[in-house]
Length: 120
Image (cartoon, rainbow, N blue to C red; front, side):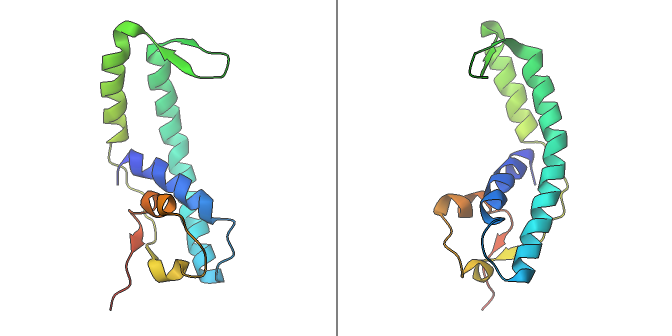
């Protein structure tokens, strides 16, 4: 799994944590979410360091402006960061375990690394 997957999983799992689900499924989702959040703490620290390394200024709305002569190298390093392998042990979620709730296609896409189709 790569860091980009961890960011995606956090978004996807966050959209499920407040849904009414059977207890075993809700527990699995909550455990996965907790592990992903822990991994994101480390990833976000590294992300902030990388941004601060190339930051020119910060706008009033909190967005960051990267130094014009450093945009290309920043994008390269940021992409390398997102492609870094990480070892987060998560439980797979079967599609049938989510059948009792409405799930958006976006959420399914974000969870694709841990979603599994039921075996026939």
